Length: 156
Image 1: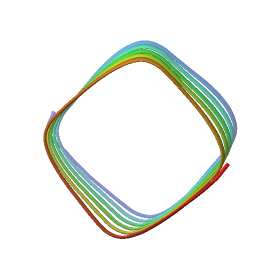
Image 2 (image 1 turned 120 degrees about the horizontal axis):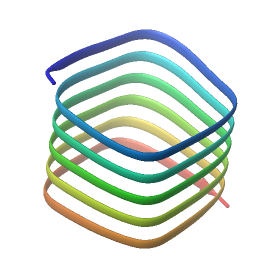
Image 3 (image 1 turned 180 degrees about the horizontal axis):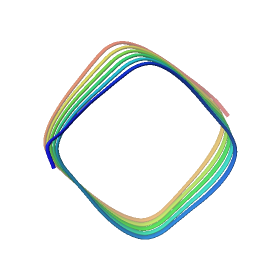
Image 4 (image 1 turned 90 degrees about the vertical axis):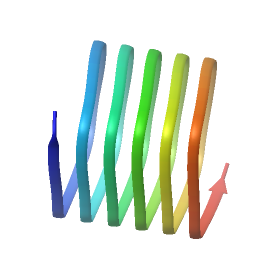
């Protein structure tokens, strides 16, 4: 699918969203994604994902200068098959705040192969998060992970 996507200077606010995704087969191949200078705020979101088959292959993802705030999110993921192959992911200068999140993950098969992940200068704050994970099969092969200058705060 050979996609080159570059996103610059985006201010995105998502408020009061009820999203349900059912029976989705998604394949992403040969994607170069660059995200620069993004302010993302997500508030009051109810997300339900059911019966999803997701395959991601040959992806180069670069994220720079991102401010992400997530507030009051209910996320339910059920019956998901996720395969990630040959991914180069670089994340730089990210401020992430997550507040009041209820996350439920059930029946997930996740396979990650040949992943190069670099994370630099990340400030992560997590407050009031409830996470439930049931029946998860996770396979990770050939992963290179580099984390530079990361500050993480978790308040529960």
